[in-house]
Image 1 (cartoon, helix red, strand yellow):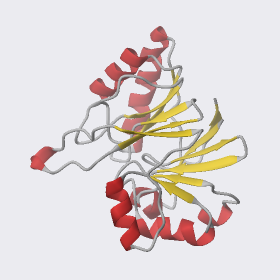
Image 2 (tube, one colour):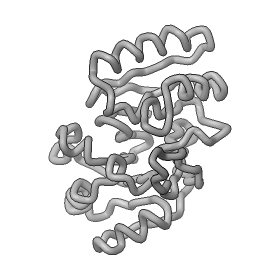
Image 3 (tube, helix red, strand yellow):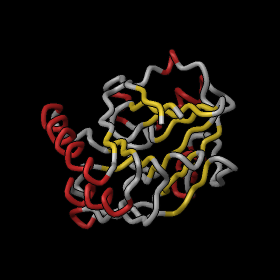
Image 4 (cartoon, one colour):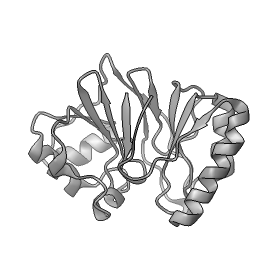
Length: 209
């Protein structure tokens, strides 16, 4: 499986002749972190929830316009939004993409939390959206690392609890680059003792797992 990161929670996965994009949000779009013109194939577009940092409609429309056959998978809340935009969407997984309801973590200021979906892809990668409220993972975990609703401490504790082989940090746009890189080096060193490999991907960088 090839995985590249395109800012924040947006990951591009290539596996078994399938290309899958997860959570193309407004940060990805505004920083031009995903070159849609260079994409040659897109089979599935997965959206964990409706917040704009995970689902940016102008970018989704651009992807759908180029890849008319792309299958979008998300929950009913996202479906209701996209249908109004004339975009087809499914709420069902398939034999290599599993979708599960997983609660969005509590937000500050009494803001409402939307339905959130966790995706398991080819039994190799788990992407939980904006949640740490899950109790199992595949060997690779896309782990939310920084947000108004979590802390680095809580995220690292979740990693130690679940013990995936590989962690790809996501949900990190809010950090200044120098801070982010410093914390990632510290997380990488700390998690070695638990035999967990921490992969702090830079924008557009690809790894194989």
